[in-house]
Length: 338
Image 1 (tube, helix red, strand yellow):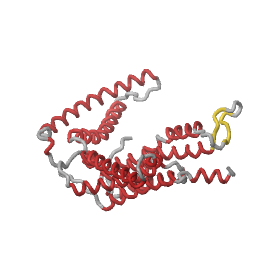
Image 2: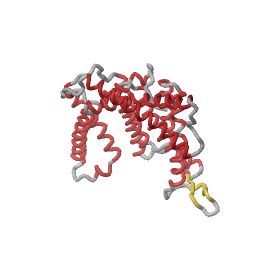
Image 3: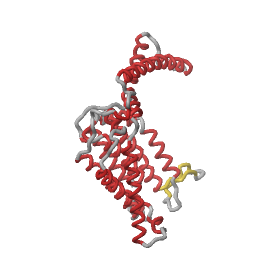
Image 4: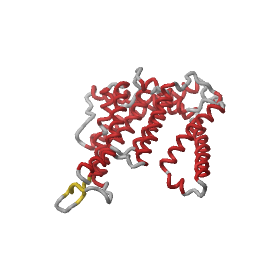
């Protein structure tokens, strides 16, 4: 089922499109950093409840249900093949020949992998469900040619502070090996992340060219239309007595060809109509100086969501740095006396 924008007035609908893009990126990073299954399962439940308040639960479940088998397969590979040296053995999957050992660490990491994939997929689904395609494209497209230096420096400083915390938590040994005094060492790292933050901010705020933004906008809007058009063609062939799902494999390929040809021709016809409409509105004239009726603006809730995501990311990295990144595994090992 195509992922189309669903109208609503939920918390996710009220966020800025750029906030939801950053939310997707932040949740992806958090799901990679967090390895404890309880923490990552709790994050998935919270995200799912937010999604259920924004989108019809049946629509949400329908798109997620088809991924359960795939993610269970990934989890199974983690369970079967994650066997570190200090792993606590449970049993062999093939006992007669002692093949494929299953460990507690493998089981714990397998559960975490299952929810990790679901968080990434669910976050991108919610971003597309709750964001109008126009706003999503505006969040990725270049709009302002001259930005005030004050807000740019402030945003760069905040980004540099986050990068500095990430560097201290993730690369402490590499920082210690810098051939400088401790104070100068931290000053050098701070200067480097400040420059990096300014560069990243400018690259991120630069945005895509308007031509690419228009292409993305048309692409997002066409997905649902193509799906409806394919369903209409399929229904029309069924109404004429055409078997669209034969059991014979060769016959199924022929049916697929009969479906694809009208869909392809209809797509070409629609693309020509869109091209004529774009040219009739003089889109290709002085593209760099064009303006936009819709303007995106961060509000208090957007800054709050971004602060929560940064806090979760830095908190999970701090727990991992101090050896508390996987308390569930330690609890299980403590219960069994290991």
